Amino acid sequence: MGPMLELRDVSKGFGGLAAIKHLDLMVMPGEIVSVIGPNGAGKTTMFNLITGVYRPDEGEILLDGESIVGLEPHVIADAGIARTFQSLRVFLNISVRDNVMVGAFGRTRSPWWASALGTPGARREEKEIREQAERKLAFFGSRLIGYRFEQPAYSLSYANRRRLEIARALMTEPKLILLDEPAAGMNPAETNEMTDLIGRLRDEGGHAILVIEHDMHVVEGISDRVAALDHGEKLVEGTFLEVAGDPRVIEAYLGRKGLDADE
Image (cartoon, rainbow, N blue to C red):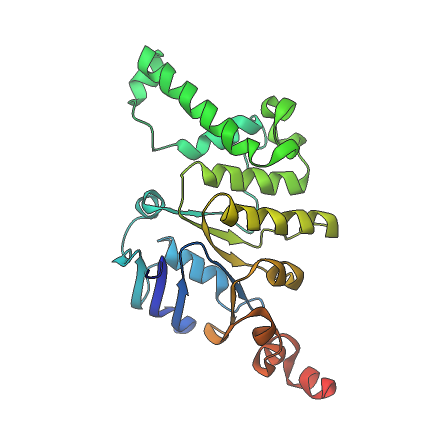
């Protein structure tokens, strides 16, 4: 079986500054791959290239063997890639369930006028979407189900807003999920729960997952493979222990002086 996602010799620059340099990366079906690196390493640019926000200057990006370079972001989403963001993108003043239903936007069968008029077909479809949203929320257990369905999103804790954003991403029925710092801002207990959740997304949901994460406890707990970036280049790829112990990775995080002091 071939890779679900493959980046081949991908490069991207902005005004003469290389943000990504000749990057090769693969995600196999059912695999969790983490990408680590200091701020400015090119990790978010990589996600923007995969999702069609940016177009690479060089190289190919393949989904199930087919190039997705040049496709609009909504077309790439329809092809099976969902994404969450480092900064939360939750609609705070609508209900938890409605936030998840938004994930079906653009994928409905009924035309806008049928929804506006409340035709029987549009009402049936809305009911189906509502039930689908509740099933996605149920995956998160007591954190998001029950009375919380009708609560405005602003009533949720920060960690539950993170879960809500993932639930909305699941509404597109993705085969590959891109998670951008899913454990950012969480306390240790919340971080452990997020680590378990990411594993369940793969083990129970069947999703392949590509993660950007700074918390090394999370990276160690979820990753089949880890790739380390610095200044847009891949330094090393392998198991968590191989990557975390690599002198190039340590230098990227601590600098040469920190590495020398450690020695």
